[in-house]
Amino acid sequence: MKQKLEEIRAAAVAELSSADADLEALRIRFLGKKGELTAVLRGMGQLTAEERPVIGQLANEVREYIENAIAEKAETQKTAALAKKLEEERLDVTMPGKAPEIGKRHPLAQVQKDMEDIFIGMGFSIVEGPEVEYDYYNFQALNIPENHPARDTQDTFYITENILLRSQTSPVQVRTMEKQRPPIRIISPGRVYRSDAVDASHSPLFHQLEGLVVDKGITMGDLKGTLETFAKTMFGEQTQIRFRPHHFPFTEPSAEVDVSCFVCGGKGCKLCKGEGWIEILGAGMVHPNVLRGCNIDPDEYSGFAFGMGVERITMIKYGIDDMRYLYENDVRFLNQF
Ligand code: DAH
Image (cartoon, rainbow, N blue to C red; front, side, top):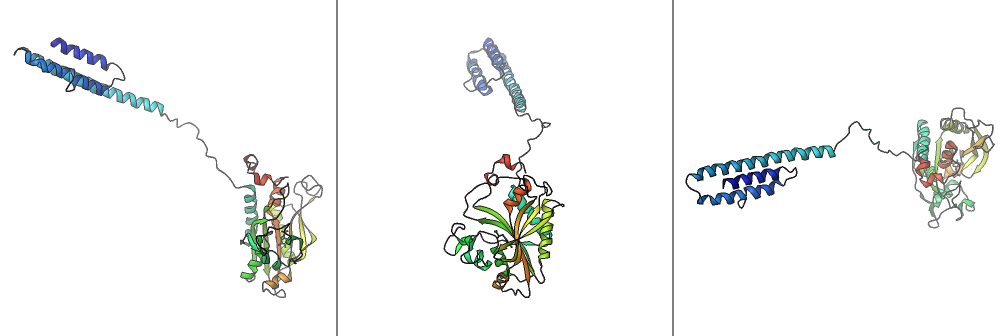
């Protein structure tokens, strides 16, 4: 029996020498109720009175020995598992971080914001108008006659006979003057729609920024000074502006306004197509009919208005020669701004 006990101890030692020994299985096998040690103790009855305490003591010793060995092994396994986990989850805090990619404004949105900021700096406030508009505001109230080509369904998207997608931001002028008494000093940026096929310089959806000032004693000089400040801030201090006579139904007199080419300074280059000047907007003194239609007395008040394309200003400023780039959302293009 003594020998049997020593064999059990030796077997336990052998089993526990393996690094990934299953400790619970070994505990059951050696120390459990149906385990090897218990089986030996069950045979104690056959021993003599002298042998019994000796074997009993040895059996207890072996049990304690195996218990301790298992506990020790458990400790070793725990330490090893932790070391392994630490190794696997190692974090090198000195490694350079992965910079999160931060987006930025689309060039059109950025230029529109730049334009807004320039006018806000001159005391203008921003108003918005609806993109789905009445014929009345888009045309009639702007002194655009019934037979004007812009009213043709070829050029304008009609929703019903008298509701359309606005073809310009100018209707916001009328909406503002109906609600607000002079002094008025507003800009109105936004989307406009025209029934045009897409090409390098056309899109059925584009953006304009409208401006309107109405007060006592407003003159063409005020218009000129305002647009000159805009042009110099947008394109550079050396920029000159030039007014060319033009016709718009809602202004009288009307003008198209050019800026001196900021690339060649007026000598002629690719950007200005050899002209030295680049057209940027339409403008004029608000037509008395438009003022009258909004219950503003043209003998007491006068005003100026202007309207420009955000795409156009963006393309000029950045030398973009095809408008379609602005809508394709190709990051290789967008990342350049
Ligand atoms: N609405 C005109 C257009 O779309 C631009 C324009 C011209 C606006 C003269 C104005 C203006 O306010 O006075 O072509």
